[in-house]
Length: 96
Image (cartoon, rainbow, N blue to C red; front, side, top):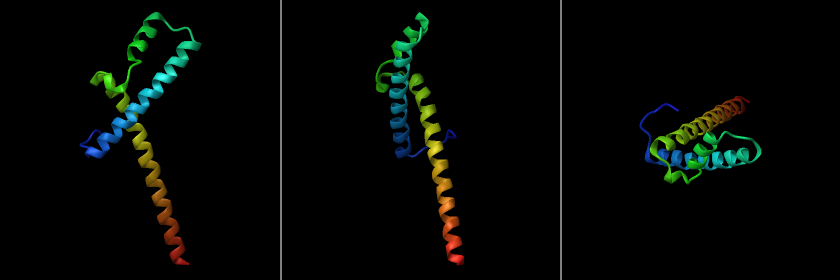
């Protein structure tokens, strides 16, 4: 999504999605760490981030927000396509 002024509701949604993205990343990275040999440096860096989203620095939170915005944009695009299809179907039915 473009970086523009968002409504309070949109900001809250992005924060909720960012939190979910972080939880998902923690699960993925912990599973990977169990199965794969990771460098000590990478494992130490990841372990430092295995904390709740609310405890991350703003810079770290922004990394999750980037993915949250991508999810939101995908949802918006899908909803827009669905609306266009419904309008097209409605117009076709009205012609009959």
